[in-house]
Length: 96
Image (cartoon, rainbow, N blue to C red):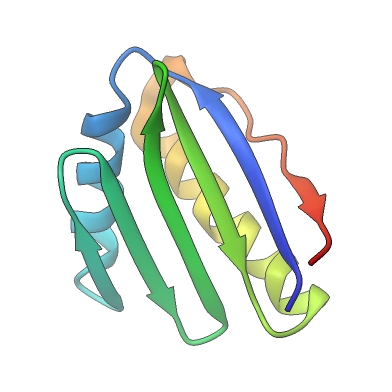
C-alpha cells in the first residue's frame, strides 16, 4: 500500500491535531488525543502526531491516485486551519 509523510513546523502541533480531527469527525471516523490523531477516510487513512515541535503526518491509501487525493485533502485543510503558520505541506513518497 503506497504511503507518504510530511513534517510541518508549527508552534502548536497539538492544537492543529485537535482542530483537524474535530473538523473531520463530522464526516469521517476520527480519533485523537493531545499528541496523536487518526483520520480514516474511505480512500485511506492519515496519522498525525507531535514530533519535536512539529506536526508529523503519515498517509496511506490502496492506490497512488487515492493517496494523491488524500494528501491534497489533508494538506488543504491543514493550511486553512493553521493560518499564516503553514504555507504548504511537502509530502515525501515512501515505499514499503
